[in-house]
Amino acid sequence: MKKNKPQASILNLPGCDQRLSPDIDGDVSRETLEYHLLDSFVDQTSLVISGHALVGAINVVLLWGRVSLYFVFAWAGFLLLTVMSRWWMKRHYQLNKQSTSPRFWQTIFALSSLLLGLVWLVWCLHVGTAIGFDGTGLSILVITVAGLVSGAVASTSSLVLSYILFAVPILLPLSAVLLFNDQADVQGIGLLMVIFFIFILRQVLKIHSVLKESILKGLELEKSKEQTEALASELYQLSTTDALTSVSNRRGFDEALLLTP
Image (cartoon, rainbow, N blue to C red; front, side, top):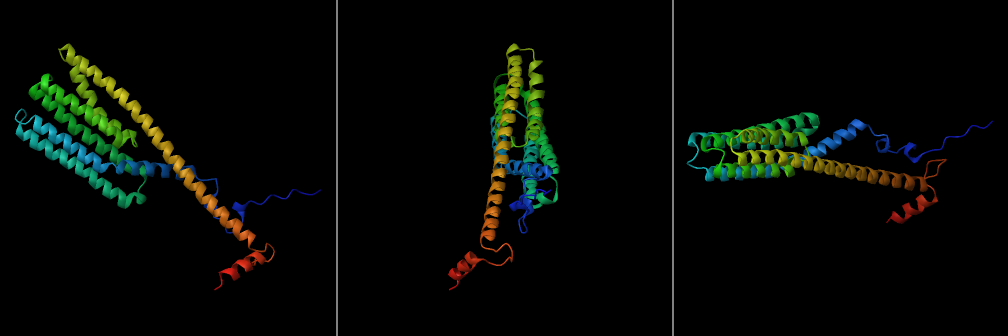
């Protein structure tokens, strides 16, 4: 009784790059995706630095003379140090990212976002304590917080944990302070800030999902392109080589003669 001879696959032929096989390790694919998400996060560093510096400068100008100058200079210096540390992290990541796991960098950037959020929380609470959570002071704080949290959507959607660790320290404590205020309109603003955070977080999760799907499709397209090029090379080699002797056939000799000057 004849045994069925297994059919040969081009991917299993000698000389075919086995890395192009569909059986790719899931961990490698996940790590590649995480690095692409980190690259997207790091690319926003300049925008983060300029945005925080601009918002900080506007706050200082608007509240100049109403808040202790010692506190203003100390806080501004700490804010500058924090945002510049993000730039240093970007440079260090670009030079050494392949030598360290993406989880390490995700943790580092998440902690830097948490620190930045705490810096702004200190500013908001101090301003509220100094001039009161009402009138002009409250308007400045609400606009500042809303601007920071909304602006962070574009710069941190690739790393959701970084966004949460930045937004939560600003919004939730400040919302709690406003909710426990004696004035009904101030309490209403505190409630609106909580609703605003929930809405924005939902949008961040959606953007993160779309971004991740886009990166995965790009990686699949790149992989398919490499496979197509490898298969085309294999097919050309088979069409110009004699299968029995492994030397060039008539077509191979004809093309070699055409290329000879």
